[in-house]
Picture: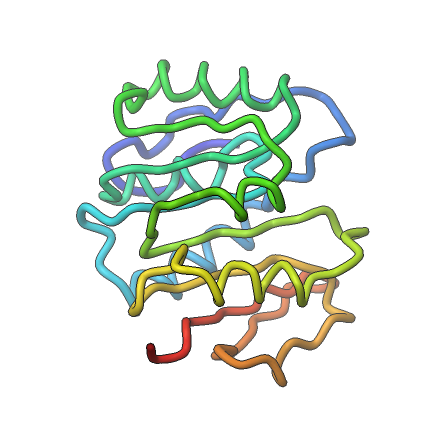
Length: 181
């Protein structure tokens, strides 16, 4: 894995040989960021990377100009790999690492983010509640975007805030924005 574009292009993202973490593929990441660059300006935005794994999406956003990234994952080895990557790239001061269960984190996080990546395990049992928790709180800025990566068998088009989705084989990424407040 490596950063694909921006000021840290080509820099390696540390990872570990484990089946506990499923990073976003290079093909999906490239397509997502192509879509995002047509919709948002990364300059100085705050990014939240939930179920961050090795931080693939958050580090890509930092490379493209995000001002900060908060990485949340409960896997200690993944957190250590992310901290090492942040040090290697030189973005430690722009990065926050939280070792926590994402649902617990969502209940206590006071911050607001312009971009939220959410990549739970495909076996996650309640995607709708997870999406609702993110959209119904003040976690996502009014003009912000939430991207949820999931198996293509899930259809969230009936949820409020749903914008569209993109399919990549059996992987689907659904895009959401908060309802006007």
